[in-house]
Amino acid sequence: MKSVNTKYNGAVIRFVVGRQSSDRVGLVTERIISLKCFDAKESGNSNSDRRNYGNNRAAVANLLQWLNSGAGQWYSAQHSADAPPNNANVWSNYNEYEAEAGFLNGFEQDFRDALLNDTITVAKSSTDGGGSEQITRKVRLLTRTEVFGDTENGIAEGTLWPYFNSTDRRKAYPTAEAVSKSEYTSSSLSSSQPWWWWLLTPNAGYAYSVRGVSSGGGLYWSTAYSGDGGVRPTLFLAPDTLVSDSTDTDGAYIIQWNQPPTTPSSISHGTPRAGQSLTITTGGSTDPEGNA
Image 1 (tube, rainbow, N blue to C red):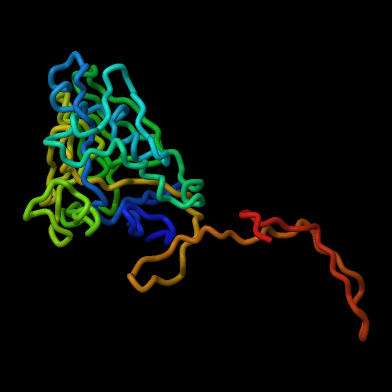
Image 2 (image 1 turned 90 degrees about the vertical axis):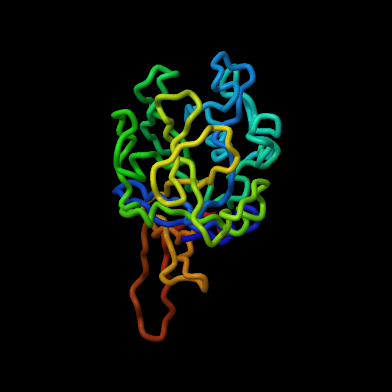
């Protein structure tokens, strides 16, 4: 599924339907669209692990802030020790993104307007008091529970998405653009091989470790400031969002933003008579997009 005028790195973003309910449809990118750190290291943090390796709390993560911004300059400090993902604050200077426009910058306005807020329970690190908290965003990452069906330290973060019903479904391949744009290179990093990708879930026993999905489809973890982590944005649309009846040449259904005019509030007419004109009057109709 795709929206032809919504792009990232110059390429149309393709999504798969991961789950459906009565009030929303959950989409996740078909492939890894970028390599980025989850959160930059925080030189002013009182916790030494977060000073050196970044912060694993989803609510304040750089990556989540970037995903939800359409601004050219998206970063603002989320807490007193927060730091941007620039060269100085990411692992080995790989894939800094403070100067990159927010993820939603490449979305057409209709798509931005259609995004639904979604609230999810996320586990908290023992450093943050343990337990869980709820976060609400329009774009986010998937949780451990949504991909693997299990819990983090006993915390259920939503429910398993039907799409992730096998190890193969958990494997993700980078786009060609994600590979070519990455400052980190490896013989294993290619659009024809699976790569690891971030989850929203902390490795709850630590201050800096974040859960992910390995290239083999298993549970994984890495340090928050690691700029080689794959990003698969997740977002939600209303279930009555229109899509094309058939696929495009690349096999994707097209999201249709143009809605039909409203039904006229009333219709009236005179008595039909042979050989005479007939006037039909309606109570008027409006077009959702304001098209003439």
